Length: 443
Image 1 (cartoon, one colour):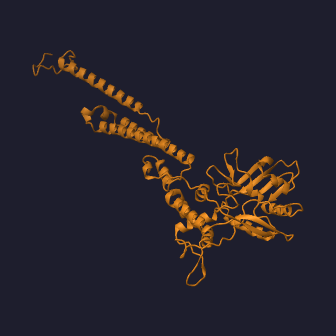
Image 2 (cartoon, rainbow, N blue to C red; image 1 turned 90 degrees about the horizontal axis):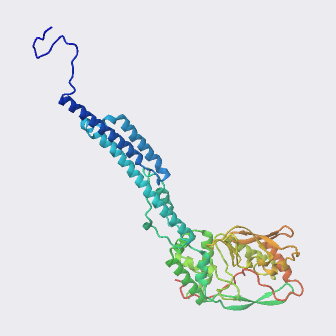
Image 3 (spheres, rainbow, N blue to C red; image 1 turned 120 degrees about the horizontal axis):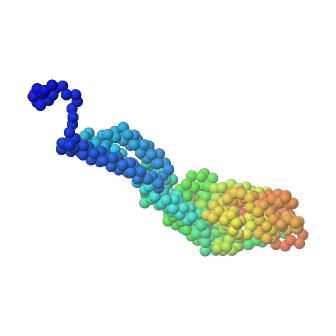
């Protein structure tokens, strides 16, 4: 059938033939191919970008957060892939949100790696505190705990400039600094033995000048060393130690009231006075200078035990040996790194320890084996220390010797015929000191 001539279209023709050789259609095909290539390239870029995100070096507590965000961002991409790859058609919002998710993840990784680097600094600082015997400042451990939290769960970095890392208080060093270089004068003190004979023993005593010097030295330690300041401020809260320091303070600095003519023992009314009283508790004994004297290491751990020993010595009788040979174990370093100093078992920082230490015969006082009449086959003893103080000697062949048993051995040994001068063992009981302090007492 002929064409109607209307618009040049034959209405009876089946289908429409496209001429792909025409320029507009060819241009459209080329443009679509280019857009498809762009989408493929963009898709590959996003996949490569995701692969480039590396959580290595992050803290373990932060990795879960990053992995969750990475998975969420991937899900967003799968759900909005067409929008993300066709910003010209759908707008740039989806693509911008997707890229913002990546930036957030990269920020988290950077924060976590920075926190990891700060952790290493903290570890070095903590190691230095331990090796140099520094004191852990208040709030430092809490700050470390906060710095270990996940970056989005309360994490805060530690500002090391906020803390002062001072040397930890050491009781042994305090005593040496206070008493070191001072020589106590001595006097002959008579002792009546069980057989009626009188024996004179040279004993040291305290003078007003030395007492004032000790007080000044102790207060200087308290005021100039933060570790000492903190230690004594806390120690003042211990009722037993405070009472002991106050008794020593009152005995040393007692004076006669000019009005009542009565003896007044001043009370401790300030931290400085407490420190002075505490330092006086540690006065050395014996007849030699404090450079080599045996110190009476009174601490809150063994103070009550020392008082018990003093009562026990009085009960033994007039001829009892003052002190205990168990307290004069020679100074020595042990394989564990701990030490025995002035008869006290301490760690590397001078802190009293509890435990059992085995010492061979040559590392113990020679007189000890004579006093207890140990057979020759006894070559060593296990010494049981409690808070630094030797409490028992144990040997399978010989048995157990307690402190009281040793004093009984010493008394028997000392009173045997032919034993001349009484041996001097251990830390002697403190003589009563009568001194006059300045009028009005110690200020």
